[in-house]
Image (tube, rainbow, N blue to C red):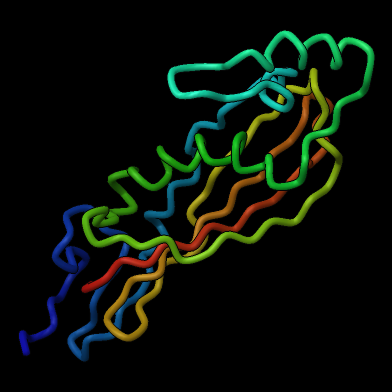
Length: 167
């Protein structure tokens, strides 16, 4: 077995972990990205009612828009992934996080819902890295997203855990 690495590199340049001489890993708190850009996404009828096909939106678009013009259309709860996930990309790829994507596995997602999301809402999602820790030779990267509507009402709070093998 290789001796434990020391310092903040842990084998991945720019990582937020520090490995002690005894092999334990610690989060370097000052490196937590505080200001990752939020992403705003307008919710349109085609997203909820249209038929998505390879290469674009299919014939359900016109029907969905017509129905949405006369109804208040509420998004199903797991639609939150559609407006939350785009904000996760920059957070996961942030060099300060130092995640090795080649060995990353999806761990889990948890959501807590607030206000309903309706057609016409503009949802803004802000991501942050909450915790990084090591367990059994794997790195656990825990992110949080907070999505709000145009009235600053929280619509969903998500916890996204990614596991990186071989830290």
